[in-house]
Amino acid sequence: MKQPVPKVAVPRLTVYLQCLEDLPHGVTRVSSEELAARAGVNSAKVRKDLSYLGSYGVRGVGYDAAHLRFQIRRELGLTREWPLVIVGVGNLGRALANYGGFAQRNFRVAGVFDDDPNKVGTRVGEHRVEPLAALAAAVVERGARIGVITTPAEAAQRVADLLAGAGVASILNFAPTVVRVPAHVQVRRVDFSTELQVLAFHLHQASMGPAGGDPSPDLPS
Image 1 (cartoon, helix red, strand yellow):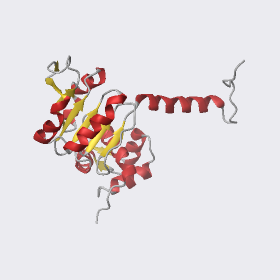
Image 2: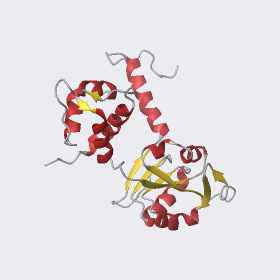
Image 3: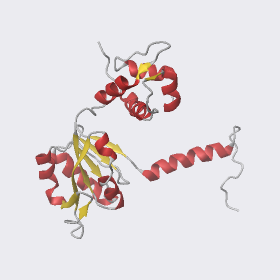
Image 4: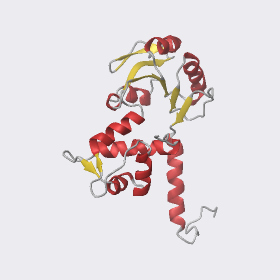
């Protein structure tokens, strides 16, 4: 009986999928060692993660790359279409609405929304910006299961409430704030400033050297 994929392994599966799709044209097989090197993990972890899919490589032969791509896509739910709505038509919202990579992963932008009357009715690529008041009905009518929040921080909670109330099951939050949602709604937060702070931490730790001493401590003169 196939074991369920642990939640901690899901982000790695997305990386493996990208690595498989980046293989040179004509490459039909890949070893766990090669996939591990491309993904930046150890080969034992790759084999363990792929075993949850029921996929086992053959020693000296490896994995069939096309079949492995299919297995990962199926496990991630990428063999069906997922309609999504984008709320917030700033620079990021516009960029996401025009992003062609969504279709490659079976995500379809089903609507773009904003509460700014100067933006409502304008076009973002092939989408006409709709008023926030129309969001709940659009989510239901178009079967949107994912909501993408690209609003300023102060508007994010209101949008999250509207999305959850309309039946959206998953939210991708780009707003620089934490939103509260019912337990059945999954939220993934993407905060660029947080990621930069993490990078700054690693840079700072590296600058301190192996002994842990900061060669140039930030002390007032």
